[in-house]
Amino acid sequence: MTQSNKLPLAQILICGALVVTLSMGTRHAFGLWLQPIVQAQSWSRETFSFAMALQNLMWGVSGIFAGMVADRFGAFRVIFVCGLLYALGLVGMAYADTPLMFNLTCGVMLGVAQGGTTYAVIYGVIGRNVTPQKRSWALGLTAAAGSFGQFLMVPTSGHLIGSIGWQQALLVLGAAALLMLPLARGLREPGFIGGKAPVREQTIWQALHEAFGYRSFQLLMAGYFVCGFQVVFIGVHMPSYLKDKGLTPEVASYALALIGLFNVFGTYAAGVLGQRLAKKNILAVIYLARSLAITAFLLLPLSPLSVYIFSAVMGLLWLSTVPPTNAIVAQIFGVAHLSMLGGFVFFSHQIGSFMGVWLGGYLFDRTGSYDTVWLIAIALGVFAMLVNLKVRETGIQRSPVLKPVAAA
Image (tube, rainbow, N blue to C red; front, side, top):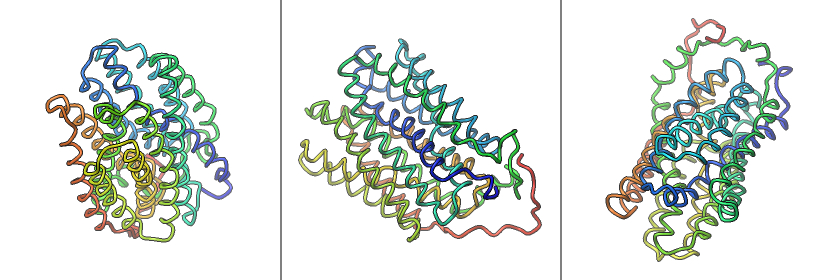
């Protein structure tokens, strides 16, 4: 994409950040609906957890195809359609009265919608329109916007649930999701107008064959699995964990909001540091620090203060993995297929998310405790630190026989 065909930097960052704020901010608050919904519907926690796990899995699967479509036709169409689906899914979630309908709306519809309104697609636009010198910073800034969305939307959602009820709160959020439709137009790339993608040196299948045969890509996927396991387990189950321990719902709301607030600083800092330091080392430190934070949280006496400190620390580490991971993918393979390759890496993240949120509900229903899942999260953090240290960040050297091709 030539410089004349690139979108203005401020436009990309503002529109992309607002889309991520709406999508990620709403999603991060879903843990607040666990107890109101299971009590109103007389369901088990595993029923709610499975729908959330399905949502994360569908998010990962749909993110791959959303990335392919965005790389081929541009992000505008993908964000517009998925923004509309997001609104419909929230309305459907409010009126779902059976586990099947809850799985279809909260699980499938919202999962597919998130695949087209979050990082894989938005980061593809940024990668194609921002120079390598500013790319890590821009990715970090957009991830920080998603974190601000969590800080904004979690207490807002808690207030809506308390004041107008959980069903009506979902309807309000559904209306807010429609704001993504006009924002999508601000991410309409000139080079894709008319359905024509820029000329590329690889087809989709060549890019996939190259990436999946490259060791560092496999290691990034393994590390991102751990990220998904940890953050989604904590985001969905910590409110119930705290209530089970005798703390008030307000503590849980403030805890999730603090995660969002400090995540603004953590993700932005990770993006800035990625311009100066080896990104694989940044990732290794983040995963190790998460394990240490969880260990301290479990060993120290539980109180509102300890919860808030833990939330602040985890907030600094929450989505700070996103800018370095995606920047490494762009650095190794280039930006032509960044949305698609980022979608595959994120699919691994969502498999981890599925396991974290589902195991949380499954093991709680059978043991009456979250202790086992907390311990698994600690061990996985150490594993992720080790695999990321082995990643090679240098750009891949392609065979000179490859000729430019139109996108498949």
